[in-house]
Length: 463
Image (cartoon, rainbow, N blue to C red; front, side, top):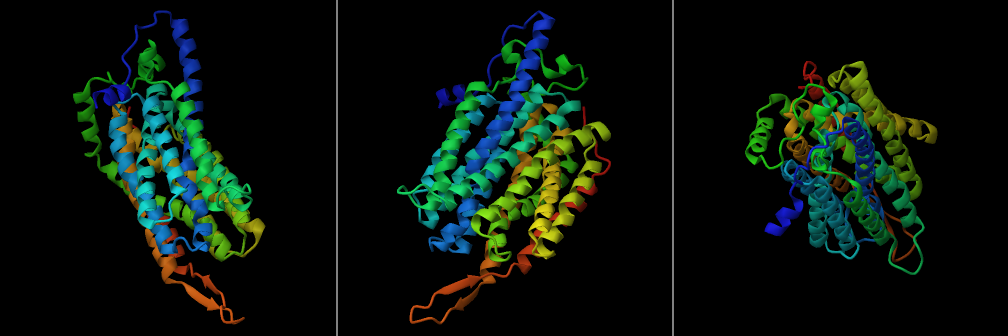
């Protein structure tokens, strides 16, 4: 145990570099590397989180699991992630983030491989819950690294860039993995198994890149803190990593901020909609809109691709136009997310209209999630405990997401309509599902989230 703790412990401070020009050169060099490898590593690691969403329809069609069982298994990842993100958020404030992050992604890869071998509900649920736990290493590690390398007044822009990783990961999953399932390599495994093998391989690569190229705190390289180097006047983003009592006191302060609880609830309800589209959107497009598996996932890919622009636009807009105030940008992007939902679910079955609606929805959703999913909370929390703030928001967000997956699966299963084609003694049964009630649940959650976020209109970032 001591060896494990020593491996994950934050690095010690190196002797301070005296040459200001060298300090500036190294800071610029490592900041570019940090934002790039965080975004790439988190995006690649995300594939291991979403694999099950893509194989839901093939697994149900093969008779391996029912929709209710699929919803239960999917919810276990989200509950595991909720607990993992909370606990790991507190741990990340003490940890060497490059090692912490890399090990989490590697374990996620191994659990995806395990999922490819399981056809038992209980085993799959346990594996997927553990996958959620290890996926929970990523976001806290990322925000601790961002807070260590980027100052308060530029955080929105860089957080927005990092948040594009969600869309990168979703795009890779819903387009690349769906293609492998639709056209799997012949002679090796079933199509749905490729939906787990490929993400596992991708995450092994991601773990290696993170361990090799991500950096811990600037002080471990002999550099000053970001507050000292940027001269932005804010408190240090992360104190001496070995000052445990100080970190713990600041972590407890997170729980005493009323606005933090409102953000958590707003994020939780927004995550209901987010994961409803991620988890059931491709199934809905196949069942109700009549698209095949690849085309349905191509439409979801358009939504995630637009999210890349949405994250960057939110960070720039809130930093530059609103002086690092998030609430005005929250309202704008919440409306951009909510209005297209009515077109997606109640509009005409027209491929062009649907594609445009999904693009606008993805743009707005990614922006508002960049804020409610972490950035807004990090702004109002003590700067030394970004991991704890991210973890606190995360447990609410993913309890909401996990509850959604199970409730949605239950609502869809209860609406099942069975039609038997009378063409002989062994007439096949075709299953149809009514999405009316689930859609009201999904859209209503977005409305509640927008109202909760708007109630914090006067909240501002704390230096």
